[in-house]
Length: 466
Image 1 (cartoon, one colour):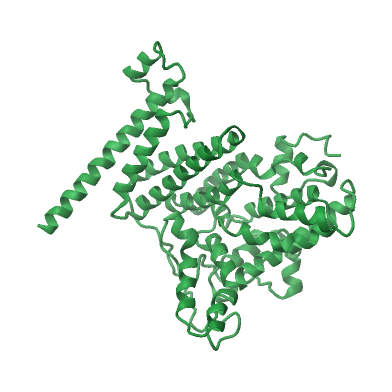
Image 2: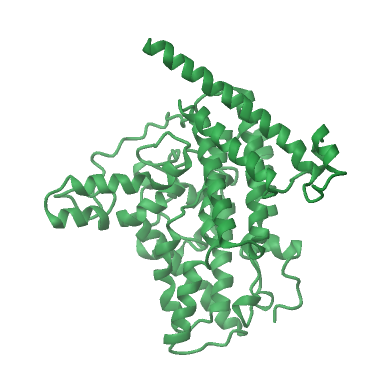
């Protein structure tokens, strides 16, 4: 099976985005044969986001995404996949182990019944993964990343947690007692891909499909911080689980997106980890061991004397007039951040493409550079006082990496050769591509700019102390 249609075709890739593949074209005997549907979906992610921006601008008369929020969301998506460079996904690894050692029955991998049963099983397990992520504080510490945006668009779908994957695997293990890992690997990806397109305000109502499927209308409620939206609509592909288990809510009044208490920052590592620090502080505030543990394992709104999930008496009320956090910053600075973000995005792409040819040490170094870049750009967006020093350091690292050929060009034709580079063509430096010299000019200018900014800041501090 799964030989009639090429897994990398445009048709297959596009239909995978909406979980519209048939059992015949997406059933595989071995896990190694399963296509990387998520990785292959990158062009569709980009295409749909651009389409949403264009249609949104025409329909609403303004942008549906800001530079600061959009880049933060995409950065979170990049960070969430970095562990894949060093190991196979926790969910699939644990699943294969249970299947190899503890399976009770072995359903046929090439049966349509097995395919549909896995579809339902993965979606039901995702419902409970998602629900526990909202109802257990230590799990919410990971999942809150996805809810931290005050906007609701396709970039929000990419705002994923680095740490959630290290616990979500537990919920899928019962399926490994009977359902083949290869079919599980297919549906794990399709379930994730389906949830991309439902993160939009442009699709209002899908009629009868609203009864069965999770749709943009239902998922908007899930992302709301209105009282009626909290802890509702956990479904992945199907909304029937919420209807069955009493967690369903219709979209009624205007939805205000984001966390109950907005974090008001675009610093990506803070977005990923700040809630863990809050839980530690919350637990230390209690004297009883039971309360200390409850701070981690009961709901985020729990306090001593409250129900397990807490109550909404102290939850900030939504008026409908809330304005998302969107600090003003100059257009040249926005252009600068976007250009450097695209450069690191290309480096990120190349790292995944070539990971099998790189040493673990090189991969760790590249991961560190990506994290440094995303952190520094977040500092610039937040306009932190230390942003100039951090960006100067990052540019030094970037120049060093270019000199050692750790970076390849996204657009070689746009390189600007310098005299040194032209001379290098006839020298022994045959392995040093000319593009890197031209690109180094751009990065060197960036380094010079931030070095001057740092110097000005130091002089300003000195004048204040004098």
